[in-house]
Length: 219
Length: 291
Image 1 (cartoon, rainbow over the protein chains, first blue to last red):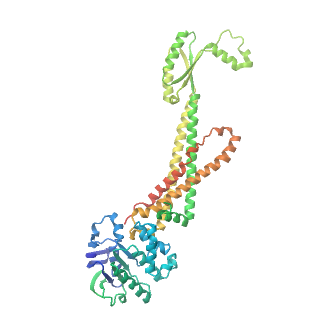
Image 2: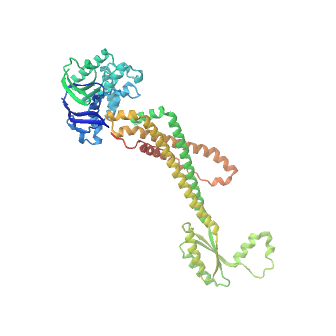
Image 3: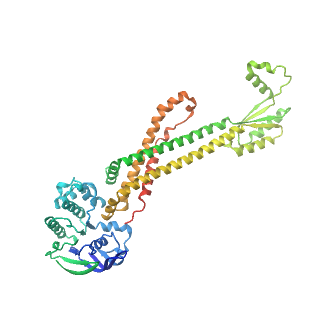
């Protein structure tokens, strides 16, 4: 589903990623681990085309990203749901934030309502549909972002430090939610610095350090 | 259509940023109001100068002692000129009669005249299209060259006044309309640019979620268009509220103002112009969206 081949990314004199090669299969749930500044977020940003690699090739769902036309980028991004580290929730109600992912895809308002409520129920946020993000706790905001990322049933779900500021119980709840989503066939890639998150999960873990892929193993 | 997502976002955006949008609407309304005034000014000058040529005439003085056959020949020659609309022959006798009528009570002034001192004349009316400097000069040359014509007189001052008023008013109108239109586009551009910068993060998020350029642009274009449209409607409302109470009161004390024409047919144009200018300003402000 996702294939990196000798991918490098530089920022001025800084190496964010160096010759990274790995692949993640369709329907897999995998972790990208490593300390802060290891290149985890950059790796995810390359997948959803917020950045372009300086060297190497990158394929998502069989599409070679290197030769992609600018006009095709939105359509690739629609195959990918992203749980941003900084949430990126808009100053609208939770309902409207989640519905946005569907409106962008041109889905009619009639269909949007049941889909959004169903997804909010799944992340246990149905009762907060009319709340604004500023009125939500960190865990609730995280779940609202997850709802927005999964509501359109993307092929791939990318999560950047999805449990960053959460207490252990809420974090465990979110990982359970990811497992449920993965069980429905969605490929999931989670970037985290928290080793507890993938311990004993039986999922593959790719560890980055200073932009290098230093190990591959099973959590 | 108005309940569709881009409209909702645009109208919510207008309401959220109501003060900046309110000021923008007022500026556009003022600009369009002044443009409409400029258009009316040019229109009225055009109307006035269109009527003036009808009052413009040329008087051809004939030599003494011409036979009626010669006079008929001269009239035929003049009539054959395409610039001439109408020809009126005034004989010596008619001229004297006219003078006597106009002197009325002071007819005694003419007593003691042994012979009629007035020359026979031909008065020419010109076609509207021919009342231009070059055409009149050509005609004068032709008239002077006709045998039996002693002198030609015409309203030189009137002719040059028509030309000057027409040329200057059109130039002033054009400059005013261009400057004000550019000003309105700039106001819309600035407003949308500010809103666009304020929503920079939101736009970035929309891009990352897979929104197309059209999806991102649509609310901004609608916002620009709606602001321009409202500005246009307010300018028309201002025009009407001035027209009825003020203009009609003024015409009582200044009757000359009755000649001013305000065609109601132009009323739909300021809102349409506002809409177009608003959308164009927004389009320029958004610029090229890069993914």
